[in-house]
Length: 174
Image (tube, rainbow, N blue to C red; front, side, top):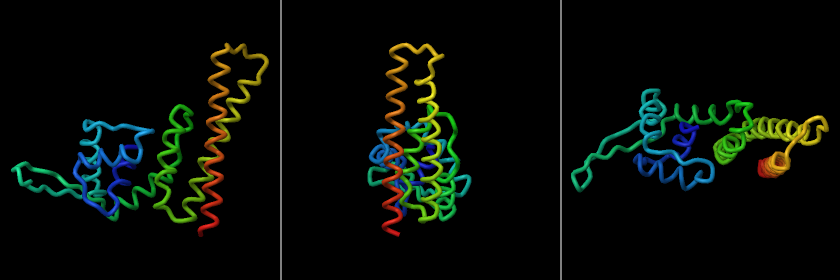
């Protein structure tokens, strides 16, 4: 997911590694907080793959600073990454899905429809799975397990409602 975050914040502007981290936190802090230790190898790998370019500049204070810019190939890879199927692991689903939805503005209408459909389908599956466990009379759940499952069901319902609102907005504006 870090590649997606980096490529998204590098939309037609050069940024230093510090500024990349700052922009990621500005847009995505509720979902993630990547360290410099995670950013540096990701930037190196994205550059090796041709998805970003870098240049070094000497600052007024005599310090070498690196600036990064997304390439056309990087934009294509970003779209592909947003549209990649998410893992069917519910533990990772909501945070990764929220990040993808937050980046949906760079997609074409048809691509957004596809993303919304995939995310809504998975959210509905996870919600149904939680409801089935909660309502299964043969599973002896503790009070705490019931509360957590009920909360998960609410989170999935809310997420589905968000997607439905985005679907309506997408249809209305295009």
